[in-house]
Length: 193
Image (cartoon, rainbow, N blue to C red; front, side, top):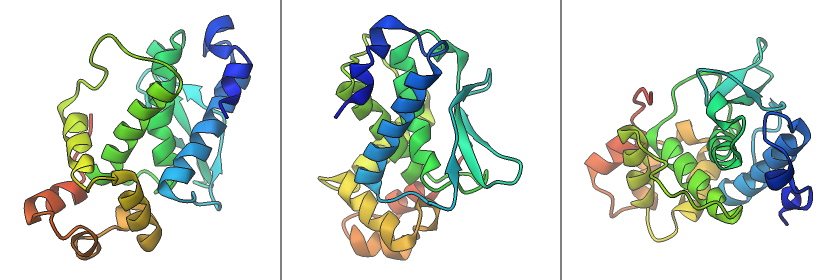
């Protein structure tokens, strides 16, 4: 169920002035992400999303007991960008690895999820929304997992406990058609931006 549409959030208010709607969206995206990728780390809290000029990214609490998404100000008055950014960061909120770099497998999962959530919420960009090369590559690599990359990613993540613990032995066993170069790329941890 798309609860947020019942609030008319996308037509009546903007994200910056609608913290209740943004929080409901966060909860919906989290539920969807857990359905696709498996349960989140329940020992970590997820807090109300906020805004940061250097976003979008995850901000950890000082004690690292939880985190929240910080969205870029370009999404403050644009629901499409708000959904896209929050969906992407929601995938990273599942594991909350304390600021360690993510691998391209997790980044690809986040990119695919954010694009699919745009469609779910009936946003269809008229321009390319993924413009940075590393994110484009992450998506291409994620889709190479197989015919249903979501279910494969969920299986891998649940087996290993989180995205960054997935290793080449587990990945090769689950996806024997992947060559060493693709596996190495999926597990690499480049600086994303």
